[in-house]
Amino acid sequence: MKSSLATRIVLVVMAMHAVVLPALYYGISVVVSRNQIDVFIQHVRTLSRNLAEELELGDAIESRQRVLDMLDHTVLNGDGVYAEFIDNGQSIFSNLNAKGVSWPGKQDFNFGQLGDHTYFIEIPISRPGHVASLRLGFDENPTTDQIQLAMRQTVLVLAAYLCIAVIIAAAWGYHFTRPVVRLQLASRSIARGDYAHSLSLESGVRELHDLGGDLEAMRKELVGVNERLRAEMLENERAEERQRKLENRLRHRQRLETVGTLAGGVAHEFNNVLLPIVLYSELALAETPVGSSAYQDLKEVLASASRARDVVNKILTFSRDAGAPKLRAIDLEPVVREALRLFSALIPPTVQLQADLSGPCPQVKADAALTIQVIMNLCTNAYHALLNAEGIVRVELATSMEPVGSDGEKAPREYVVLSVTDNGAGMDAATAERIFEPFFTTRKVGTGTGLGLSVVHGILETFGATITVDTAVGRGTTFKVAFPVADDLASNVPTVEPAPGVAS
Image 1 (tube, rainbow, N blue to C red):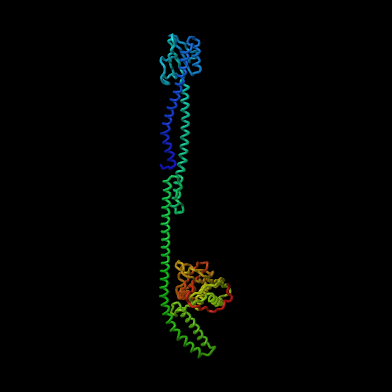
Image 2 (tube, one colour; image 1 turned 180 degrees about the horizontal axis):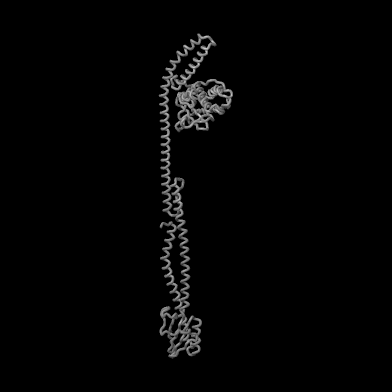
């Protein structure tokens, strides 16, 4: 059965006293008994000797009555129970002798020798003309009672001492084990993952103090190792996450490049088909009377060809086959305001267009015309997310040191972040993962080409910018574009008018 250290200390103390106290009691009883007996015997002999000397030197021996009076006085005042004076064969007995007590025939040499509880002593009297002796008997019971009383008191004292010793042992055991208990509690807390508890021991016992110091040093070392392992694991997780993101981006880029190459070839071939259609339609239109049904039909053909050419241009933009843009240092605020001015004319009054373009923002490297196209496409996408209902499209500009779409590492330079937010239906994760794929659209057949966000993605890659989307079903969508701040490009800030009717 396991017990605490304090309990074991108390048990050890009690076991030690179980051996020591009986021996101590025996020793005390022997000393007390012998001391009381010695005092008794000394008292008896002194009294007897004084009485014998008085009989030897005085004249009381010549008077029987005086001898009798001396014997009675000895019995009465000396704890005697028997007194006898023998002179020339004649005995004189005290009138106060205890009943049933008689001379045993010899004197005692030890206390309680004859077992009669009476100590007998005989002293010869040396007196000319007299052959005399004095026989006295003293009661041993008072001395025996004193010895027993002393032993009972000794037992009480030893019992009190044992209780005090047990209490002191318990208190000392508690005081001794309290640092160990604190160490145990701290160890359990550390085992549960709370490494802030110290294992140091404030104890006067050198071994415990040193043990606490060693354990605390070990704890600090283990905490350091644990923190290093945790940091390494976290860094490995971050590296794996970055690798996963890079792999996804690489696969996405490869998929876009494949589709872009295919789209570029299709666009060129489509352009070759469109060219004679446009040319011959224009020639036929010039030779057709204005107002005729053929004239209107030709105009519809040209309009359709124009729309087809716009689609081809978008495909060429996505496939990067329209030529790399010439990047310049531009100020995004006037460019955004110009794009919003154009966009505000395309939306119904039920859609509220808001802008927070409070600057100033540093210049970025981009192309102004393509940037307007990016903003128009993002705002159009936000407008379509409202499903032709009332809603808000909000555009914001801000600066940041961490680019949108980075792999979790701090950016080495400053970025300007363009945000386009709507409070529309939002998208689920599966849809959000495919929005930049060409020809992917959630709109009805015939109402969208699925190239808007693909074109945005292609343009932003030529800028060195990044784009991410934050969306969820039922809470709207936010697109964030991070433009690198221009550092060594020549400034080419376009002059544009602020967008009328745009809320700031």
